Image (cartoon, rainbow, N blue to C red):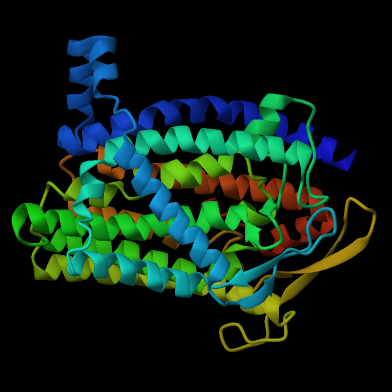
Length: 434
């Protein structure tokens, strides 16, 4: 019953987002075509569509090819093998709504190091040319769209037939179940966590792999890697490195601990991350802009500072949770609120809410440096076209929506304790504004 109530509560925003995701589904290959073949100009794409009509649009829509499927399958198999076989420490996630405690193997940093080292090595020794990936990007993105859709059908069937835990259930609406997901923690066997694979090892890892790919492709095209590409790619790689250093903390976030594994989150990680999140560097491949030393260093330093602040926000919260509040935040014992809640089984539990350090500035302050970091790794493309900045705008909307959803979820979970927390930490994201 609790599962059904929770799913009904989410039906309205799900219906609203489904239209957006249908648009995004059809948008990805044209996005690639515009970035690669139309100078990243949205107006050129619009003119093309007006002149060529629907037939012209369908003509530029790339079809999946055998080489695209081979590249995706090889990459996915490699990452799945690393996730399963590499050693790692035992990490537990937060208590689930049904009272379960998921267990993970923390080997993300090692997988990240091996992935990038292997990728660069096979290029360096002439075993594989990463430029092939760039040359077949459109086909790869189309294959990912189809593959991820089939994968989400598998998740839907699995959730009905063989759920991995009691944190699963149906809303009674097949479309909502497919879109939102049936299971919170789906696994294949005991050890292969599907959301860790889709979100971390496929999605986030592909971001780093493609950043390296774009550098290599530009080098092959022009005989050099422009400072604009270096700044953008370095900042992306620093951010992804930060992510894997903090991966066990990510397993406590809304993506893993609250959003179920359905089309909404899995399609985003399997398709949207490799296509749109990497787009600032994709644009720069054929735009080797020269920034000069001073501007390059300025953008690089500003971006790294933002990434560090984002990391430090997460580090403070992770340390606070790990020590149950018995730690120092900014050199002093943290202030906190003990918030009680009830699980779906009726069991009373409590969590500590941090109100010190970065978490005293606003309830989701860590989103501010994350958005700014994205702006700084896009900035090397300068302002000749709007499209490279789409990711920054998309990320801002995504994170503001996520902050609102998190506030709603926590208010429903903690009740009066969340009201106390909001009185102490008044702003949601931007101090003094929102």
